[in-house]
Image 1 (cartoon, helix red, strand yellow):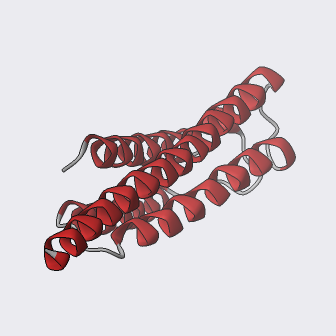
Image 2 (cartoon, rainbow, N blue to C red):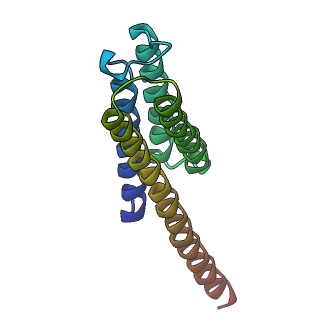
Length: 145
């Protein structure tokens, strides 16, 4: 696995971690949500997030070509999740303003991590395509000889 791929995988794991932290913070009574989140719902969201990220990361490690596109879809979905959590904290919580702002800040960090992931994935794609083109050029040179 190339260094670029390792970075993309690492930041996907960080993205998952950020989402799970935010998910479990939303369960705490101190959040004073108007519609409280049940513990069973938090577990379901956790299992689904881990399954989505794990499946796509395993495909990436196995070098399945479509894996990074699937991972990009997963990261995009959970970016929307961060936006939703921030919205819930601002509109459906009677918690202290400091707690709400802190939660929005955590969601913003999560969104930033995901945007950084997309930048890394794009850079990785450029590097991998360049390497692929160079290999094809080498093959063409060898065929012409």
